[in-house]
Image (cartoon, rainbow, N blue to C red; front, top):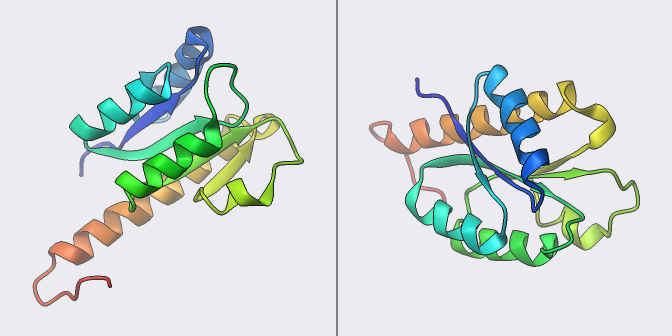
Length: 135
């Protein structure tokens, strides 16, 4: 089984390097993007298993980016990483899970393992003989 690729999106390169080191140590393959535009371009060309998106960023609107990812890549899990406990409910509808920064690293790894395992199982079911496509 191949190692799932996690695309981490954050406008601060030093934060990306920390996330990358943590996730690679935990067995994930990690790609990074410092902008929403760069992330979309990468998603068009890489077999990404999940996206890790920071909620509050200076140069990005996480809600708009999550909407765009959902529209263009509807089966791609998005995990929101946040330090805010008072997130608008509308953004929670756009993501497959969220992790408080206080729960990193264990909570983050656990959530990513769950969504990438679920995605891999869905992919395997779609490839299985006699399987029915989702509607």
